[in-house]
Image (cartoon, rainbow over all chains, first blue to last red; front, side, top):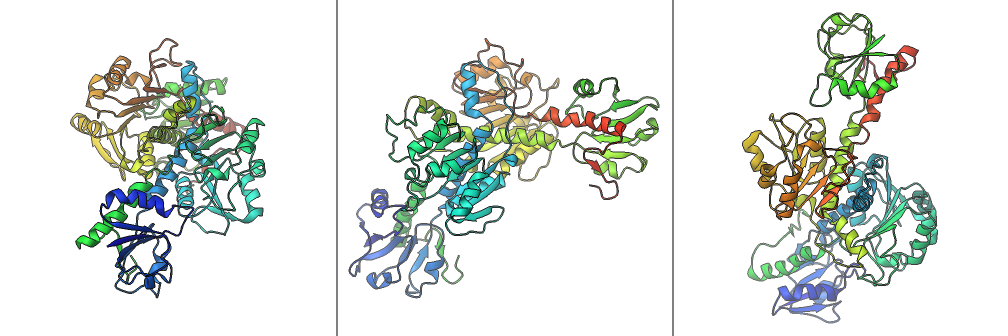
Amino acid sequence: MTLLIDIRAPQWMADQDLHDLLAPHLPGVEILCGPPTQTLPTVLVLATNQLQPDMAGFLPNLKLVQKLGAGVETMLTDPNLPQNVRIARLEPSVQADEIAEYCLAELLAELRNIRGYLHDQKARLWNGVAPRRAAETSVLVLGLGHIGARVAARLAENGFQTSGWSRTQKSLPAITCYSGEADLKQALGQSDFVISVLPSTAKTRGFANADLFGAMKQGAVFLNVGRGDLVVDGDLIKSLNSGHLGGAALDVFHTEPLEQDHPFWDHAKIAITPHVSGWSLGEGLLDVAENYKRLIAGQPLLREIDRKTGY
Amino acid sequence: MTLLIDIRAPQWMADQDLHDLLAPHLPGVEILCGPPTQTLPTVLVLATNQLQPDMAGFLPNLKLVQKLGAGVETMLTDPNLPQNVRIARLEPSVQADEIAEYCLAELLAELRNIRGYLHDQKARLWNGVAPRRAAETSVLVLGLGHIGARVAARLAENGFQTSGWSRTQKSLPAITCYSGEADLKQALGQSDFVISVLPSTAKTRGFANADLFGAMKQGAVFLNVGRGDLVVDGDLIKSLNSGHLGGAALDVFHTEPLEQDHPFWDHAKIAITPHVSGWSLGEGLLDVAENYKRLIAGQPLLREIDRKTGY
């Protein structure tokens, strides 16, 4: 009896990483990784983000498709998936909520000068500065997938003037949505904060360069909770040192942990957090192991989808 | 020509305090305080929170009721207020929103270890700690007046398990409301954060003492955005040093600015901000003086209410 991991979302997670996470929780269970190249009659459970149309042919004894996320629309409408195969989903909103809460915390810390007051406290300095209010602050979220949309929504709920930018045009309640190159310049130029939630792809690597920082508003603050390879580190430092950018809060880096001799560490305008914005990814993923065990034991599955009603 | 200050909300603000705030901005203007006990024919403007039904009889030449807040429903429906008397309001929500935003910022800074990571950054230390989530965090707000209610609402909107405590029982949407001494112990004992928004009165001075801190949960964090004389400073330090309380974030103090030799400054578990939670109070109230001057000069008033439409 076998679990097959075939995620098909390499920029999100490697099959082997999920394997290593689940293996300790499934002792004695065979766990295979990657697209099948031959019929695999022992596979009972498939863990995937993107169900391939030819999959059922490779997995004649498949009992459960475990989606590594919440959306199951494509699976429900897949004509190749036999009706007796069950579908279950995960709760990725935990991760998205965590990242949104991190962004809210960082923005408010900036607006309320929390790091500045800690500095003042060490010097026994009583130096109040006028607070900036969320309602008077504009934020641009780069990337409007599941996580970016949740970040933007959380900020809008808290009164921030929130806009978002994505490659393809989106429509989100209470968010001004931009797309494409021309829109990007405009959106960057009017925002007090720019938050990247972009994944790492051929198009995003090095995307946060001198051009992008130069198009940002004087004194604006850049946040990165997406991927570290988005940023041209030297360009960010130059933009901060020139006085153009007001600050940066970074949770992700080219190399993690950040190298000991990296100039970010002691830059007065850079706040570093050690890749903690979306901490709880792992916990949610353990439900894959749990559902495997429940299936074998004949117990009710976590978050099984009714294939008729779709929820 | 006279301004009468008769606020009728002593726990919010004393008449004399508003007098002292406005006097420098109204040179040569007579400013009276308190309920009238005789007819005052020179009074043109009444600044109040609660229009008394007998007021028009005392003030035969009243031209303007300046509400010290936003809501004017009761004034609009007051049959005793002559139709030629104008009504204007203030924008007090600014202050309450600011304080609520401060509390949200401080709580999230604590949950996301923002001060801790700044400390780590100086030591080039990459040390991620699991974030705590608002949804899994309980907060108790002491004091449920205009500001306390807004603080509690903002925290509940952000998913915190929010409760409130006040001397007299309140009822607020999404907030578990406690009142009285017995309830206080219970509420304190179940909350990860306790925020005081209490004013300074005979009953609240010294209220945050060893008993109160002792009734708080092990490791809980105390925030004070109300008044400094609520806290018995030595008791707070003892509770932090004993390991019972996890931390404190203080915006108000017995003496402000905080004395240079005060032990709070270099206490590792105390975060100090220089009375900035409700920064914009003074500015909003100065509109009372501005509207007095505009009335005299025959200029349009700030935030005058159309008595027919009610806005």
